[in-house]
Image (cartoon, rainbow, N blue to C red; front, top):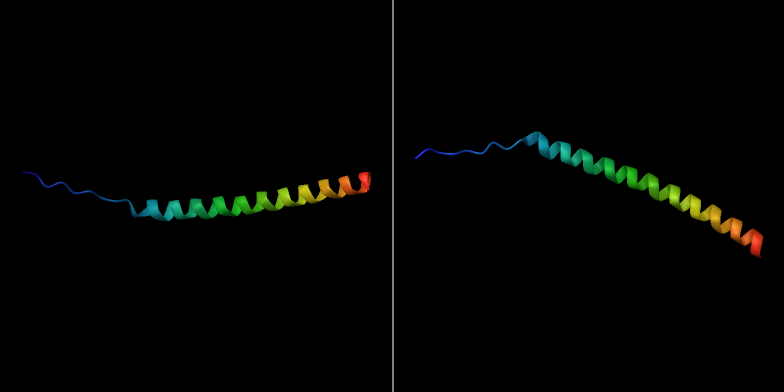
Length: 50
């Protein structure tokens, strides 16, 4: 019988971690933009209807 060995790519884990960190960073930016937009929208509503 032949022995089969599996070589794992160590760089995969490092790259995957970097991708996750980048995704979190972009989500934080998008979240802050949405909060600013919602804040502007509420200010417009409050000034026009109150």
